[in-house]
Figure 1 (cartoon, one colour):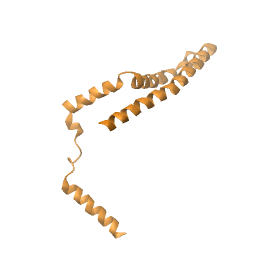
Figure 2 (cartoon, helix red, strand yellow):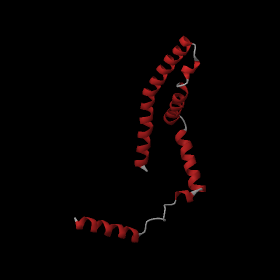
Figure 3 (cartoon, helix red, strand yellow):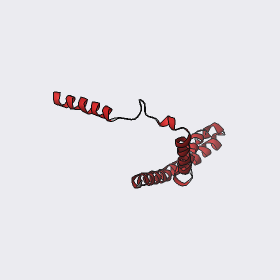
Figure 4 (cartoon, helix red, strand yellow):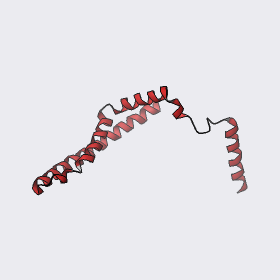
Amino acid sequence: NLMRERQTAMQIAWTREFLNYFGTFFGLTAVVLTTGAIKRKNPAVLLPILPLSFIFSYHYDMGYGTLLQRMKGEAEHILDTQSTLLELPKGPLTFKDLEKIRISQSKFFTEK
């Protein structure tokens, strides 16, 4: 659990750091595109702001919002109500399966 918490903390920290750079890029892009749209009198120049705003919103929600809590809630819902989606193909590994893999790998290495 401690390892998972550290990985999650690193993910949040990475997202916050990414947001600093992307936020600067997004802000400058928005200013430049808005200026271009006004000068050219063409609002179509503003179209790139739309997908960039979705990316910015996602990362903001990940770094400072409630995205992780919502993801955790959805994961708990899947575990509680749709656990069949989590089953491995051909079922869980058995000792017999592991032995078969081990023997085939040992033959592979001894033949060389």
